[in-house]
Image (cartoon, rainbow, N blue to C red):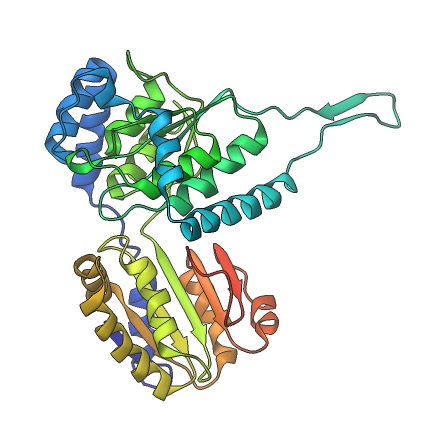
Amino acid sequence: MQFLKTADAGFESAFARIVRDRRESDTQVGRDVASMINEVRERGDAALAEYTARFDSHRLAEDDDWCIPLAACREAYDALDPDLRDALETAASRIRAYHEGQLPENRDYTDDIGMRLGARWNAVEAAGLYVPGGRASYPSSLLMNAIPAKVAGVERLVVTTPTPGGETNALVLAAAHIAGVDEIWRVGGAQAVAALAYGTDRIGKVDVIAGPGNAWVAEAKRQLYGVVGIDMVAGPSEILVIADGNNNPEWIAADLLSQAEHDPTSQSILITDSDALARQVEDAVDLALMKLATGKTAKASWDAHGLIVVVGSLDEAPALSDRLAAEHVELMVDEPQGLFDRMRHAGSVFLGRHGAGSG
């Protein structure tokens, strides 16, 4: 973890190096993914079975081994602790309401020279959703990707998710039930993206693929763009917390680690005008890492890519934030709107000390 102060003589060069280090996949990942895509395209289900046995230690033999029955998703939902079930339902309801407000409207009009113009919006017939299932599983990611597809009117929603050792995640299955997923396949990695793009004897191809994943998944989406539509080529996960001294350091540590636990290449950054808070957060992260179930991954990320920046004033923060262009930004200050108005480059921004969090 690096600790920088904007007042220090070497700050600019050190910060510029961090901005330039985008933690991109190396060329070997690209070559490996290209080979895997070709294998799936040429050999279909046979290649999927071999890769699943190799990477997930799970043998895909009978039909039940390939596809998770929708009844199992309903059973997982019914078996949830009531508080967890309520939390998922509440999240789903809010996600659905938000995206219903985003539905585009058709246009059909005649302009002043008599030309008829317009646009008609239709949902794709089939969408594929990649749901991580390796280092950690995130039912929130499934809800946030599946529900917009259903709101848009997608007829067939297909989920692929790795199940290491054949083990499924009850929360992910319950979320799939809530979202109304149509198919769930026990395959992951670049091979799953290739299967969705080209189709196999078992898995029908889709029109667009969305959802997060590791470097191999992101690279597969990049290489297959054009064969299939994609949401984006997402790089390693990032979080930037901008905070004044009136914050709970344990909360900030938890938010920083919420992204560090995703992958060793994830990046977690704190910008603060309080040297005392900076040191307290550093200590809180160290303590949390000893208790975190995903501590090994989170520690690797924090040690390699973690950063704390102490500024003379939080007025410096928006410019630094724009240079980082982080995926998630939290503004943990009393009046976040002023900082937010000066920011141009960020994925999602959470305003206030009790914002929605990075997810």
